[in-house]
Length: 108
Image (cartoon, rainbow, N blue to C red; front, side, top):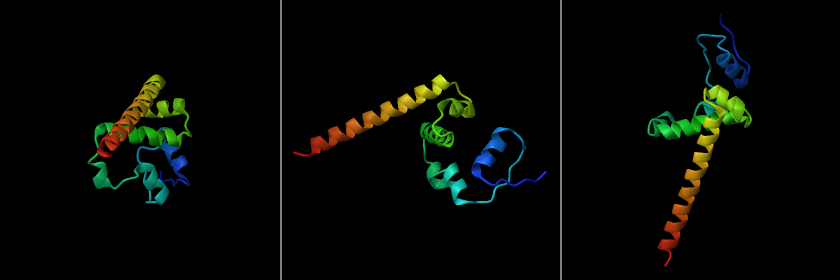
């Protein structure tokens, strides 16, 4: 059975609902943004942790920020998602502090 999808949301719903074993997709700008924001060569250089973080952010964006639905889509517990998001904020905060400290040390 061949069927076309009119939107990425419809495609996502069909994939998540396991309505089809295989989905053929024509290239589109919206779908490319959904899949990855960087070139394939750059994605291969990312750490697994960064790939996971970006995937979680994309899934969270696709659910309109609904963490319960995002966790369900990701196949993880909601508490696990909250912990991951908290760790991302903590690591970003630490990176900003390091950057600020190094900038203040170089200005003499």
